[in-house]
Length: 431
Ligand SMILES: Cc1cc2nc3c(=O)[nH]c(=O)nc-3n(C[C@H](O)[C@H](O)[C@H](O)COP(=O)(O)OP(=O)(O)OC[C@H]3O[C@@H](n4cnc5c(N)ncnc54)[C@H](O)[C@@H]3O)c2cc1C
Image 1 (cartoon, rainbow, N blue to C red):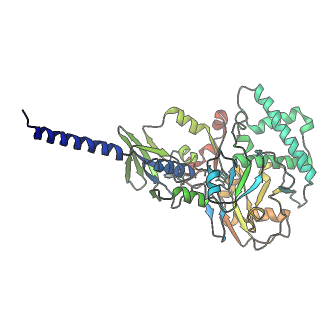
Image 2: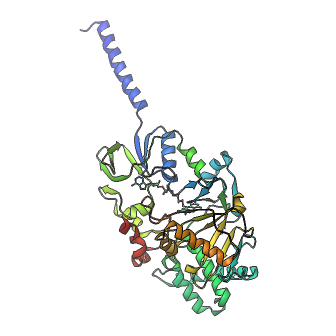
Image 3: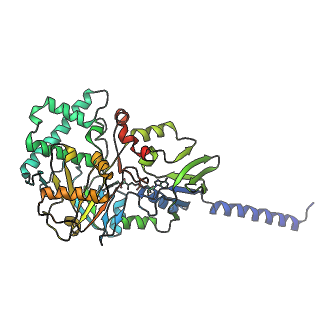
């Protein structure tokens, strides 16, 4: 029989062993590797870190933010990627943070419309001969465009297969001669299509009729980040373990977690990984998944489109343009139309931002920065002949940058995705 002391000792040993297991259990926190340091990845890493997970964030670039990129080389902030908060409302998770940081928003639109807000104050359109388009015509054609888009819904109801929004517009115009526009009116209509292409970052012949309006927008309208998005990124990233210059090439799922390999061969292991790289990078298969992703994920990646929108910011030493939010150039095709965002109205700095989208954006990415800035300046000269030369410029390359391979996604639809290989294949051809 064991003595009382002995049994007490054993009990002590057992309980100390038990308590150390509990302690271990209490301090044990699962580990996660977050891949991609844009808003998605940083927000995920922040939430996991705050919930006591062990988090490492791997980012391929030597900067954080991804498609949020505030440039300070003009001496003040200019967002070359995202710049609007779409949906200025409580449900938008960014809104309270922006408010807490005291960052001002410039409201470009109070309502939720994105395609046909033709508020008289907000933009001035010009023909390529420099003549200003009368505002009544801009408003009238805005209403016509809205009616045409409503009519495309009837076409959608009739068809079982998907077609592009451009084909649907053509069908509507064949059926409804009263909605057809000639001469200057036709050019203004093309400008509205150009604006729509900007929203989707792709041409109207690639946008799905079936899905183009299925997006759910938050309420509250749209607000421009006057001081840029960078402070929001920096606040979210504070205190996180972030490794810049770490381009992930392989993600391997193992029986007890994941193994992530970066370009130089180094590996990281954790219980789980969060993949927050852009859709363009996934479409181009720049990361190998082992085992491969489930079929439904691969299909979703293949069927969504990625479009390109770029920004060419022109910095002038003085303001010579009217005090409107957008200056637009109308032309006989949407490809020939263009627009400039007037940052002076929102921020007080003498900057115009030319924003090409779709094929025009991709074509302009083939040019040197100087040539692209010159194209933008020449567009400005055609509508404002007294325009002076910019003192500085900035040019983005979201379509060809291997860290993004596109600007943002749009609904191209299954059938259209197959019929537009040049847009879907661009990223992998560049790889
Ligand atoms: C010109 C432009 C204008 C826009 N305007 C607006 C706007 O006004 N409002 C708005 O809400 N949205 C706008 N957007 C869209 C918005 O920027 C994006 O939806 C958003 O920033 C995407 O965040 P993300 O974290 O998903 O991707 P990203 O910000 O692209 O982040 C992904 C990160 O992954 C990194 N990465 C890529 N490959 C690898 C790899 N192999 N290994 C490790 N890291 C990798 C990238 O470098 C990047 O940092 C705009 C985008 C562009 C390009």
